[in-house]
Length: 369
Image (tube, rainbow, N blue to C red):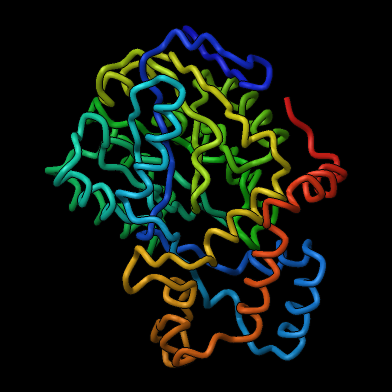
């Protein structure tokens, strides 16, 4: 590995970037389905909202494992958010959108955008032993995209860990493809940490050959990212940025490069060159950022007909197995749990309360580099 740098704008108020391009990796759009099983754990951290959640949990009126939400931004809006931030740094943007097991965002953008700057990419859900890993597969060949997605979907539906090395070997034969082990320390809801650690050790023994980089994630705490740096070092792999944007906050970290195309950027990572810049929002308390993302997820978007309200973007699978939006299920009447939670979140996320929230959440002892 030739060069692997990680920098932080709060240590360099006016960083000399010495690069022409900023690369945003790992961002989500309306085409991702995000399970809500994690939600009660986070909502219990917020005073007032916690009591509402407990009320519904005691009465067993809602099963969060059957519910999911879709991020508010369209592919074009998501790209615009990331490009604007990178352009403010004086850099030319490249953006790789990676929805969960879905490439519709990249396909739609490919009609109007330059594929050299906006590749076809996905975040692939990989069940493995008793846990899940997520692989960022970037710059998928468009001619092979249907067959690649079919292969990924078949593995996810019926995982066979013995077949994974062969799949990765096939993907890696396309020299312009980048395979990233996303947030390797992250636990899917319900997964036991000891099981995840055992599976991580196993997948790295069998598959690390095909992982081009390990991700430092803009929505994970620094302690976890620092552990990822050590993991990457021990396996002789570079680290790479992953913003993991789900709402409207732009990515909290990006890669810097001189590459003229995304394929050239991939070649740099393959060669071991990676330069990461963490941006100011990463230093904000993580709980505060989650709260503000929740505000963006639940607020009104009149510019998106058919998806204006949160109830158009949150879905629930009923006893009959059919998935319906909350708007359809409730026929225009918002359930107290979500409407009350949405109102409380809007209040707590109000910019006038930001200093008080920062102080409150900072007392949790979160560390930053």
